Amino acid sequence: SLAGTQGLGKLVAFYDDNGISIDGEVKGWFTDDTAKRFEAYGWHVVPNVDGHKPEEIQAAIELAKQHDDKPSLIICKTIIGFGAPNKQGKEECHGAALGDEEVAAARVQLDWPHAPFHVPEAIYQGWDATARGAELEQAWEARLARYAEAFPAEAAELKRRLKGELPSDLGSEALVEQAQEKAESIASRKASLACLNELGPQLPELLGGSADLAPSNLTFWSGAKAIAKDAPGGNYLHYGVREFGMGAIMNGIAVHGGFVPYGATFLTFMEYMHNAVRMAAIMNQRAIYVFTHDSIGLGEDGPTHQPIEQLGALRSTPNLATWRPADAVETAAAWDAALKRHSGPTALVLSRQNLPHQQRDKAQLANIQRGGYVLKDSQGTPELILIATGSEVGLAMDAAAELAAKGRAVRVVSMPSTGTFDAQDADYRESVLPRSVTKRIAIEASHYAYWYKYVGLDGDILGMHTFGESAPAGDLFPHFGFTVDNLVDKAETLLG
Image (cartoon, rainbow, N blue to C red; front, side, top):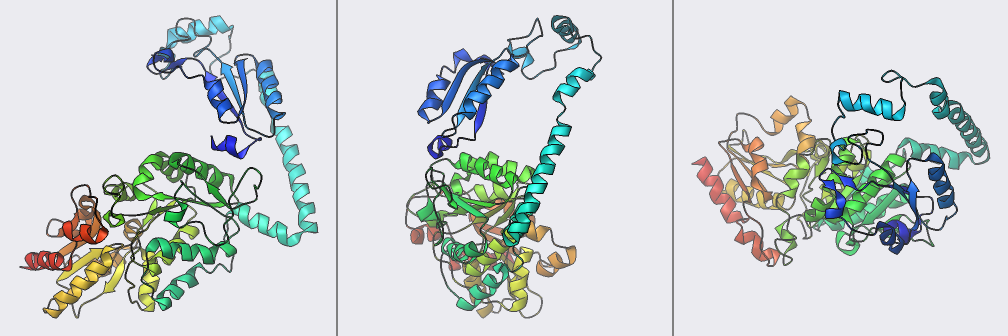
């Protein structure tokens, strides 16, 4: 649908119409007129191509290339397992080996006397594109050299972007210090927009988008320009209500190279695009997900929109860096980390509501990039450690202050990125969470179970055990126990 709307005339897709799926003949559960459906999307359709005849496929490709104002779908009628006389056209050959007897029968049916894995020379030569590829590569290199000679600055910029390198003078680290100096108490989604407004002009490769939530996600920065069929030179794609499509397209953009894609939706709607996020992690691709409205703090939209288990799923995904910043400073640090991470995707989990600014010294600012750090410490060895993320860091700080006034030695650890913290060396982790201090409480308005790895059996967790409710955020947090009084009570009970 989006490809048709954008008029992507260079896109040619093949549809293998063999009428079979794992469960058998699809006519019992799939009767769509695929050709008409894609025509309705605005595609050019080439129907009824015999997928076993190369000349028909080639003719269909040439026909598709003539329609450069819209994408094309080539529908190939095929027989699954073609050549296997007893299993072709049946689901038996969809996901299982044919077996020795059927392979032998297929050899007879196809008149294929050659040894297993042997490719006859004539066939090999017909498919060998090595020489042609080398010729095309040499032509490209020569063209690039001429371009570099005529436009050296532009060529250097092109090479930088194709290598995935960031500008040497990128000011993402400076944003962290600037945010600390501004000391703003704002929503982390708004802090993210401020980062984009600063980073966007420095990063022409940023290619943003949102799944129909740009005004809520705050990802359409001041220099953003929407991509349209008649204006393809923009840097922001309105994906519509297509979360999975957005994630998959971001993967394609990342694999292509030359761009750093970021896409946004509500955190709970991450579920719709989870497979695409997982694929980015598997493929080690730099994609940045902006997941806003990160907790019950989004308020009246209620439990259908309030994420509970999503953070745990993100954090448990291998090679996905997940950040839930506590204020504008940690948000800037999270963007810095995401842009500099070349080995996989990053999820930025941001609030709808305002978050209180936290004071830090230079060492603490630097340690944000270590995923977890001591935000507030006690005199001497702490008897209790409060571990929090995002909007609950402010709550932990307030509770620590009250406990300190009662003579308790309390440390507050802000842990915006658990995976990043876990990757630190053992000495650093021990300096933040010493094994000798077993009285610990984790505070997060998300599913509680993830935090046992940090608090152990002697600790406690202030988290969510149920889905949320529909009410203003100011009512929901007390309703679910996210108050200074409740946290102080938990701490005093734990300390005895």
